[in-house]
Amino acid sequence: MLTDRAEAPAPATPKLTPKLTPELAPKLTPKLTPKRRRLRRVLRRAMRIEWAGQTAASLCWIASVFAYGITSRGDWLQLCAASAWLLANTAALVMAKGD
Image (spheres, helix red, strand yellow):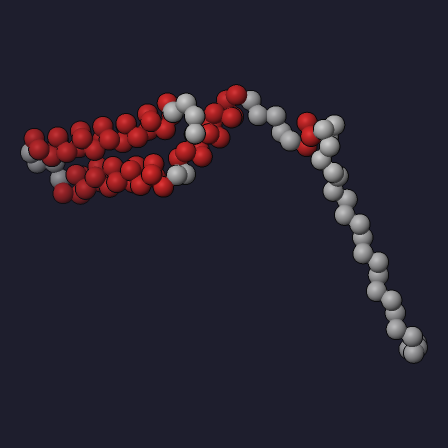
């Protein structure tokens, strides 16, 4: 049945997110083990444009050696140089102490 009265909108529900107090902080934030903290730092460094660009360049260099074929000693030297570059990039990523 229709009436002349407009219905009032439903009241908004309150947000149920707790405030982050010192007592709740340990419960809500996951504890990171030293291994996970190190992995997080390594992944953060790996996402930087400098490291990603150098690694992509070395991988492209390796792929180009195989695409054009290994027919001479110079091709082997190119492959060794590109592989050394990739190895150095990976070692720098893993061995870095801080950000």
